[in-house]
Length: 79
Image 1 (cartoon, one colour):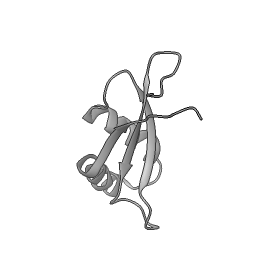
Image 2 (image 1 turned 120 degrees about the horizontal axis):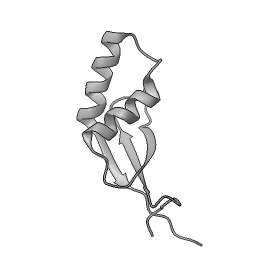
Image 3 (image 1 turned 90 degrees about the horizontal axis):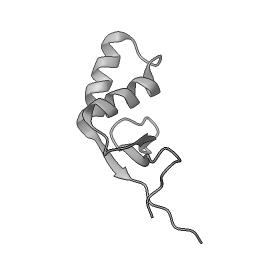
Image 4 (image 1 turned 180 degrees about the vertical axis):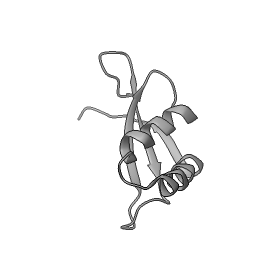
């Protein structure tokens, strides 16, 4: 079953295999009432990385994030 909150939003997993420094994928999660758009990916990046880069490095990292991230709907099962 998909994971939803009380607002009717679905949980999505954004994964980027190119942006980690430790060999593991960079993962983040967002709540949306639709499949994440380019604008949603930009907002997620902004919230995650706003203070982590200088301006030029930020724009380069953001472009990498937008070009190489994959989005997946989160599913869970009760056991």
